[in-house]
Length: 393
Image 1 (spheres, rainbow, N blue to C red):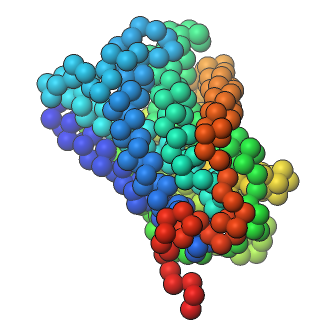
Image 2 (image 1 turned 90 degrees about the horizontal axis):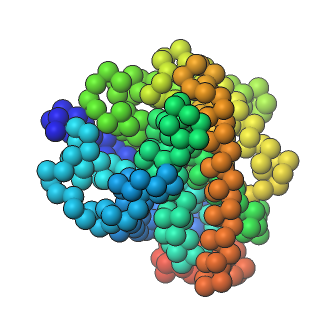
Image 3 (image 1 turned 135 degrees about the vertical axis):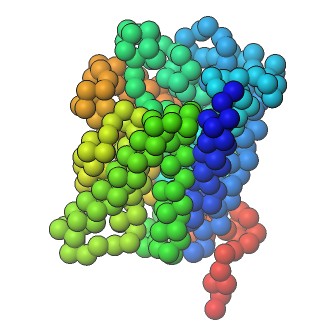
């Protein structure tokens, strides 16, 4: 065990949990109507709790267990069986590696929440996410990070896919799942309104930005120069994307919005995530600069041209941004185009298939969509019996 590495990953684990609670919850909560804000916060909080238990029970074992199978890690480490405080994963206590990866397993399904806000049944969310984390997220993590068939020595030969912190594992799986769910769910009956609290959105985005240093820097799994570079390029990409999003918004609409600028921040962060362990500052500047425009245009296509109500742009920002970052690794000569693009296609198709099957199955047990009157009046009172604001005055 290396004490410095251990100390850094303890900090990084805390930062990544901070991304979901309260960062993502506030970011998403500020973007919805005042009468549904608590439903978003509750979904994020409940997912964080549920995924922690699911990860302990089987998720970690499926993703990082000792099974030699190329598609899953088996159940030998379920409930951390055989893992003690002295067990090591590299230079880290394995229980710390478990906890660090648990925070990734928390934020990935939480990202999906932004797609279906204001119209989905709370019970459906919980059951679907529990199953999805075991059937989709954990196997994909194994394929890429756990030595599975997409990693080095797998179907793409000695040079497997390069995905440092989750362009495919986190952002593509979340983005594609979000897109499929909203297509199955349908658009909101009430025309989307402006965010009820842009201040919450900015605060949440700022928390995400800070937490992302643990997300990417921690993925080095060591306290060294690689972690420092990952942290630096993460910041540069986020800053560049914020500026290009704002500039492109000014060119198109004549104004720069706060919500737009901070959405650009998230686009830059998602895009640099897979590449943060492989590129330097100049490449990060390019990746973030392009991502600010690319993801903004993706938002316009998804909502404007295709009329798909991905409410908070999960696919356009995370799905598109994550895959863009995966491809840019090869563009900058740090990976194989065949492995990068091929892996993204394989995982994308797998995610579509799993999401459709799970959504149909869970829908047989729990209705996917709330009743029309509940959707119209807002989910807070009807689903949770409380409201964030006094809307009667």
